[in-house]
Amino acid sequence: MKNLAKILLSVCILLISLILIMLSAALFDFLPIDWSILLVVLSSITFIIALIAAILMDYSAGDYECRKCGQRFKPTLSAYVWGAHTLTTRYLKCPHCKEKSFCKRRLSE
Ligand SMILES: [Zn+2]
Image (cartoon, rainbow, N blue to C red):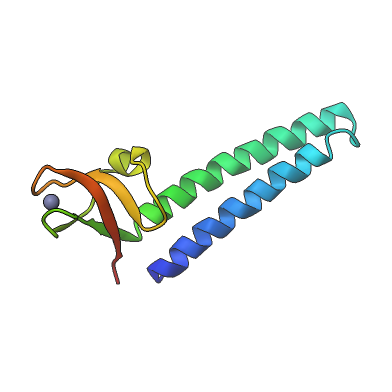
């Protein structure tokens, strides 16, 4: 699968599961209480699974380029998950020069 498609798919999965949570919250008052709780629990579980799937898909879609030395590297999964990020950069420690910077994301082919 193309990496851009992976990213788009992960965003779509997340959006759909978010919509499910909002729907179940909106229906909370209109359904019997047992059904409402079941719906909220199910949509929360779906969201957690979707989040993990999205993280793994996004993580596998490319590597990062160091701002200081220009080397490309693949961060560890925990550094990837906990690193502060924007859409195209992530705050990571470069394994080559050991400096921390907002590394640019490079999609691999
Ligand atoms: Zn570096």
